[in-house]
Length: 274
Image (cartoon, rainbow, N blue to C red; front, side, top):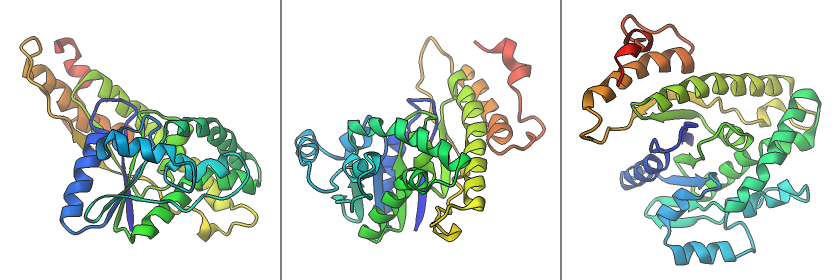
């Protein structure tokens, strides 16, 4: 089983839309796919499910019908991750819906992750890896070939914990200034998160053998450039100039490599930008 996330701290670049469409396309090709909604805004849940069904799920407080319900015992320090109850949304495609209350878990994750770096704390490790455990349980329940996580546009502790469940990260970007800045933020952050987790994994925690810790490295898979919307007051050429800077920025800030000749053009073209 492989796991994937479309991730960027810039909103509006198509993360959730890509997750929805790619999950459906792959399911139609016979690949068993589970989507987990780790975004407290619950956008992917609202796309997959109509409001009456989503309301019914949210009103059901018994069992693991949402991400938040599954993780609540861990957040409160009173139990383990609950077995998830998946929602079938198409042939070969399942969803574990999100819930707005998941945002309450952010502070706990931030506090406990810091403890995994500074001390031999099994409780901190259990909290930090709870999203990975939940992801594995969901994938096992559906015998999934692929797990796709939907996350919000932030560089917070919740997304860091979600990425610990991912083999690969694909970065959706738009051809504009904000997405370029997003690459410059995301790349170093992913590297820092990866290094921190390697430190924890190599040191180990009492009671948790190294082989039981999440093995995922959330490695960069590539980027996808959002197609521009033609506008009379913003010529296509302006988008093309920004798009031309994306390969060099991705190589430098995400992969940590020197751009190929002619790739990194932002400074040279900056005075010509609209």
